[in-house]
Length: 117
Image (cartoon, rainbow, N blue to C red; front, side, top):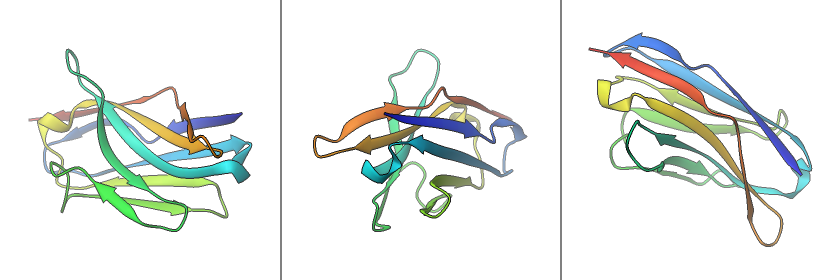
């Protein structure tokens, strides 16, 4: 089992920045990829960014050039640095980890990010 706890969400003005953190605990030695997804009201959950255990990253086109994902394996934590935020970035952001040979997904409880225009 893997437990994920997010922090760092909040309210910010358009053009501002936030940094989300996600700390993993439990069977962390089995974690492979980690990442962030988001879900806006009335929309499906979508991929924001992922990072492999080796540090390879993948970002959605909508956030490229504005968001950065990083990972501190020593702290079992993944970060999402969000710059130049836009109102359309408003959503609940969920941390995700895939663990074990079958890449079982685990989810955090979500953190709200609201960008005011």
